[in-house]
Amino acid sequence: MKLVIAITGASGAIYAQRLLTALASDDKTNRNEIHVCLSDYARQVAATELPGGLQIPAAFTTVGTDTMNVPFVSGSAAFDAMVVIPCSMGTLGRIAHGYADNTITRAADVFLKEKRKLIVVPRETPWNLIQARNIVTLIEAGAHVIPACPSFYNQPQTVNDVADTVVARVLDHLGITHHLVKRWMSPASESPE
Ligand SMILES: Cc1cc2nc3c(=O)[nH]c(=O)nc-3n(C[C@H](O)[C@H](O)[C@H](O)COP(=O)(O)O)c2cc1C
Image (cartoon, rainbow, N blue to C red; front, side, top):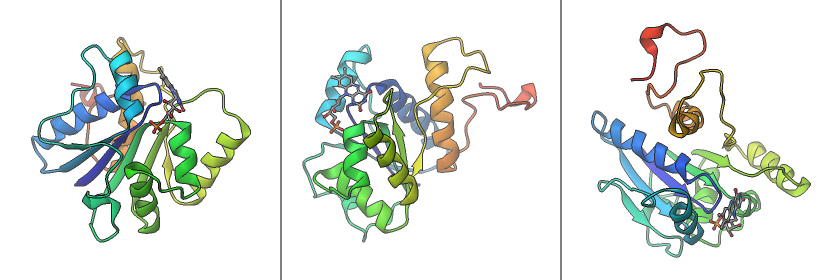
């Protein structure tokens, strides 16, 4: 798959890290092409939240948000999906209103106009009315909104396990096979490795 993983300055850098780790693992069997796009605040928040900061697999290309010299900001380049994880409410609002002022918001604009899969993982609580309406606007525009709301019915034991309950849903929407979490009422043989 050809994917764009955009990371913004919302809390929850662990969600991005766990997704990148899962994609690196998937890369061992499937040949993916992964482009990582990081906002300035994403770097800052990741440095605060993750010991050692964000670890981006060497095989992935990484850019900031101040360039249009990347393939995924153009509809002419065929990509399968884009994930914004975690997505700040600022970036979410800009995407919802077509404000394509940087690499992430322009890429998201392109994915929506080309009817390509755009998965947005907002992290904010509580929401104000503007934020709630922006989320509705994105859903109406065709985006997959997967809020960073972990589940607990599998009794996660570590912070990574908690984060994986969200990342698993992202991978499901990407169509990437994984064993990050045990599925509800599934046999024990399908438990996480
Ligand atoms: C430690 C920290 C945590 C933050 N958490 C959130 C958050 O959970 N959700 C959010 O929407 N913004 C959060 N912000 C604010 C965003 O970083 C800020 O709105 C920024 O402009 C987002 O820009 P970006 O979307 O280009 O990364 C946080 C900022 C800091 C420093």
